[in-house]
Length: 337
Image 1 (cartoon, rainbow, N blue to C red):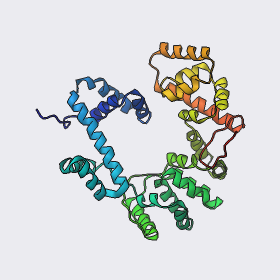
Image 2 (cartoon, rainbow, N blue to C red; image 1 turned 120 degrees about the vertical axis):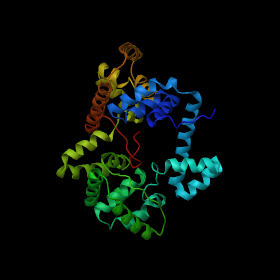
Image 3 (cartoon, rainbow, N blue to C red; image 1 turned 45 degrees about the vertical axis):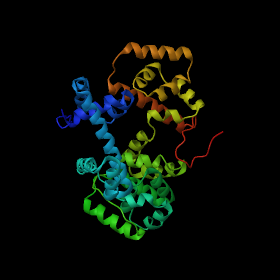
Image 4 (cartoon, one colour; image 1 turned 180 degrees about the vertical axis):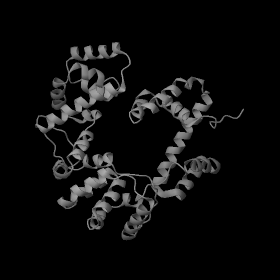
């Protein structure tokens, strides 16, 4: 009997995959979904036991091949991906995989620029319009974008940051034109897709990589014209999971201020690394109490968990602004000893 996954819907395949990858990965995926999506996926996960084991294996293999194909596409384009996949999977499976990905995965615009030295890009981009710079930076890797943003003229930094944050979908024609111009100037080649980019998450990723002085200067200039935007950026600058990157003294300072109620909710779906970090910086008695409370409370609403984590992040931001703790960002920060 030939086994196939054709009769499985996309949601069913995701459910099978998450069960196979385990609860920690599933939790991280759920954080990115809407409530209706979570409800639908949860229902499918509860029915995974009705899926044949052979189909489960095929779903995981399919996902693995999609990841391989995406990596190869990003690295060298369609021809390169086809060549490598044929060697790895055989010609037939390679064609099936690439056919499956055609409508889903494409190489991002400015792929050629990701392989270019940031200083070389800076020499070209610094003379371009702020909107053009914002478009290019929003497609580059965060580290690369932060290096370029940090070296722009101060008056241009804030304007570029604002445009990245407010950027929505850009027309394929505009992306193509900008890409071709930049490509010609760099004398390089690359592929393109037409997915939207920019937005708050993009500028947060970039600002999280720049040195603190650049970050503060940009936010200060933005606050004069768009204070609401700055507030939204600040909300996203430090996430709850980042607490593991703080020094021991800062973590202990934070824990002293946080209520047990917030810790119980915040740690309900926290990763083992985050949980161990927090428990390891409080008294054994308090840690035992919180663990027991979490065990006894049972299921919690995701919204309540997120509210508790947001409360802790707000406290961290407040303590940082007062100079009571150190939150390191980017490679430009000096080490405190």
